[in-house]
Image (cartoon, rainbow, N blue to C red; front, side, top):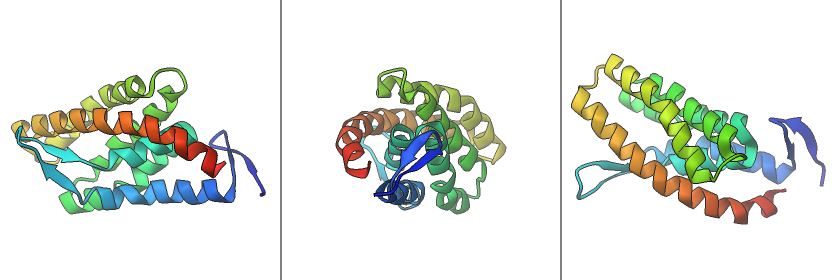
Amino acid sequence: MQLYENIFGVRFSHRSFLMLGFLALFPNILGMIVLQTPFGFKFHFFQIAIFLAALLYGKWGGALSGAAGSVYTAIAFGNPFVIGGNVILGFFAGAFARKENFLVAAMAAFAIQLPWLYFTDLLAGMPEPTVRGVMVALFFSNIVWAGLAGLVFKRIRPIIQ
């Protein structure tokens, strides 16, 4: 199996390239799935792919997944700033992933993303109570998906290398 060196600072096999492509495009499909919770906020699914890309491919893989995987949501909501916000989330989750527990890394990335999310959602015309609701929804969604991504990563990594 041929390996490619120094792309995103990661060694790639053919399987690894396919996985990165999948993780870059799959958040668009996951972005179509949003569940209303009994607690009054919506639960999002797209973060799992961004977090897996960040774990597997580092900051640039996370950023790529955040960018390419946000196209559907940006178009559907008429908010192109979503792409930038998910690039921030993926980039910093990948940047912090090697240094901390991944849940801590993902939540630190989310903390960095929050000012962008807040101001750009207001700029896109969302009412402030809605923006706060999105922030709460993403907080809880990120906790679940970061924890799951950390577990799934351990099983996926050996398969794609």
